[in-house]
Image 1 (cartoon, rainbow, N blue to C red):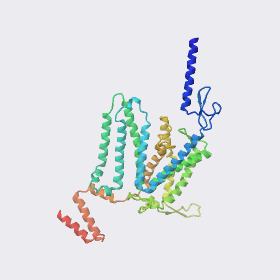
Image 2 (cartoon, rainbow, N blue to C red):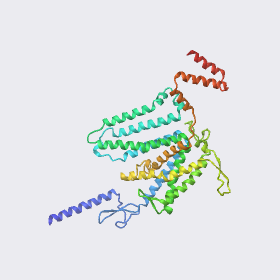
Image 3 (cartoon, rainbow, N blue to C red):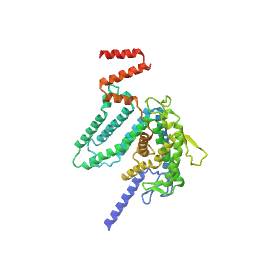
Image 4 (cartoon, helix red, strand yellow):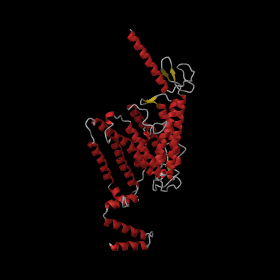
Length: 452
């Protein structure tokens, strides 16, 4: 009995000590005079002196700080976005590249790494190597496609452009061989899981973001419009949901409602029609990139895509209508498709991200943006929307005509040097006969040919 009494005393002293340690970690004020277990005036938590327990208090101040932080960083993101867009296409491409890299880093980081596998060499290095080789291939494809007239005639860049795909394949094979050589017994499962996880991240983030960059090259409107539609849909889904939302939409996101989903769809269509009417008036938005140094002040010049030119449509005679014809640009029809995809399909990119976060039991992908989580949390719907915008544009809107880059590519890769000279000779004679070049140019060219 005496021993049991002594043990009880020791337990009591240990619990008392523990309670004091908890109090110091919580930064409890010793000058508070509030009742035991009640919130203090400064919003901190207070210790229950009788039991040594920590009682949660009013979190109004913390929510206020979080709201202020979130608002400030929202304004910062909006400012960076518009400054980059108006500064020029090259700055916007840099912004998309930064989003690619940070999103890849966040997705790779959420995979659980066993403690015994953290000492493995080259695991992280291989992840970044595959990212670099993938971006080299994708960016090279875009630069060669949109700037053939510059790349193919340059003495240094021409060999790289001609053999770009083989060089990219070689880079990937080097990484693949290095991965196989680095396999270690006892870590096979972890290493192959990391290999698969890396490739999934490359496909879902880097490849899809690459098409967003291609949208910028095709014209600023094909980048700005899809991004704006997704953001608008997200805002109206929240407003409609809290206003008259009742029916749960999907279990992955319990706060999403059917009413908010449908209401946001309708509002996004109206917003898209209005925004399209404004953007179609400015060539800076509708012209493809032909000068990477262009910005909102210098502008761009081009022959507008027919989709932006208003047309007159005659209504069927069997329709009882006072109006017999209507005039609008075909883009007004296409925007209905864009807005519908942004409202009904793109949100599933967010649901996919929610399921992924639930799988790893995390709230956000990272902390890149204070108050918002990670970059991936803000871009989950944008990736799939950008991919759709590119595919839809190439399938139904793009006008495929001969360009200087295409002609040069055909001549350089498909003709022998003698045939290339004949093409130049014939083109020079044609320009002379049309009065575009003078006789001195023709004489100089013929003199050079005689020296051969």
